[in-house]
Image (cartoon, rainbow, N blue to C red; front, top):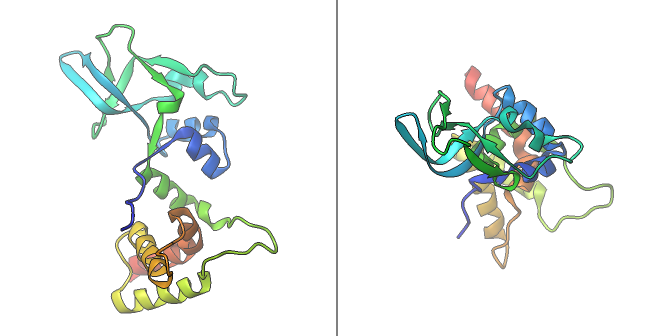
Length: 201
């Protein structure tokens, strides 16, 4: 049985994954390319009670994202955006706002995948000359072609990745399969091309 795709990544995990800094992530977030979320206890925003997953504005707590790494590890946020809302809500109680930690600032797995797809980040395959892999990647590409030929292109890249992981598990004596990222970076170019062809059809 396979684990589901990850739902959240910390901003530090994403920075490491993409080879950038958290300052870059703050900048992209400020321009609407992705949302930074966290979880908060119930707070009062005027006449509303907001709790759980909320979007925070990176520029409201910008010192935490200093490129030099000297920023504070926590800060108070005075406004949040409730999950599914397009409007920001000012926290009125507690008056000081809610303290959040840099370790608790997250990006959803769905947005991480979309950002990687949009910018082809997974095309940069790790490993230098002479590196070896325990997985049959050429065989996977053949299986991918057969899958698309017989069943068509799935609705999402995540579904195709899961199918390829299932193929690896079936070929393995112990049910092992490569992680999501390894599969994604090898099929992202094919996925993009096939998706464009589907849109133009």
